[in-house]
Length: 386
Image 1: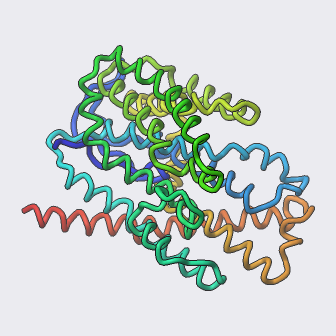
Image 2: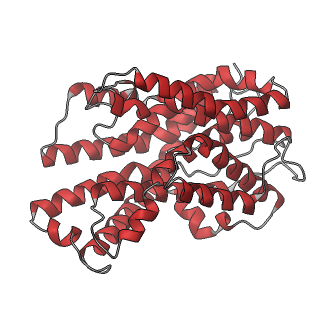
Image 3: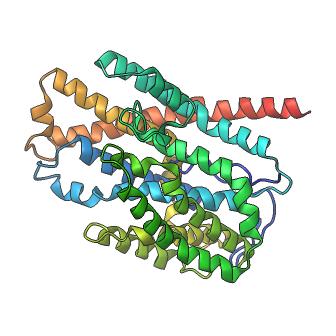
């Protein structure tokens, strides 16, 4: 079955998106783009949002100097929604006619799994050293990327708590061959109807489904892949519209401003139903800006370089934070690092130190693990086909 081509995983994979053919592009664009650096830059912004959100979980916000920062990043968890939407969009954008399911999944494995496996091993080592609980079943479900299908403590976010998003991505990839051809056959009008109906329908279905869960399972409902599927589909639909040249969304600057307003508003009002569509509008506008050469702040070189390592950063950031907390508690320094210290005191050093350590690990993983393993595994695949 023909299938879309390789895609950086929504959980922050930073590989620039190859376009293998000239395609229909947004009105006024030229098509035939080889790279979409603005999307790579945006990927780092989303990864930073998630980092800030998790920092607020492991680090108390009682520090008066840092309190405004923690308020600003408190809604950073919606960065995960950005990754899911981006996943669907880029799969459509990088479509290769005549591709096979086997070739597609092999490329996904080459891109995702080496870094994922390394992060999993690191998490297991940390748990073993710190006396954490490790069960055979939680390890097995993590290895097979099915952990977030289990509504039970010790599964969805066990071992490496952020890895549940990769489980969702695996589900998205497996279903795409059956979904994309059907969406491509729909008229533009029907695609817009689906785009409007999906978030509302998902909200209603998820609300009803959550109410029917026992209390012990309810906290894990948001990790369940089908509950996040509408975010991925929104990206796919907008991708189809963009490739078809029928996307009528706002430009880069208006869509950027809209995301900022959405982020701020989301701190006070639950407007999650529109989050995927707004993110999709920004992604489409950023892609169009790269095609046309329009000025884009998300194409800034340092931002793109950070985006290239953002998948590894995403996988390792929470592990670095929690390990640092354990070390500080073990040495009786927890109060200093998390108390009412000035910005350049304990709290500020913790914030900057964990960020720096995570970045160093991430760039090392990207250059010495992710890229080499992609070359090796893809070369083996070509040899096997020849």
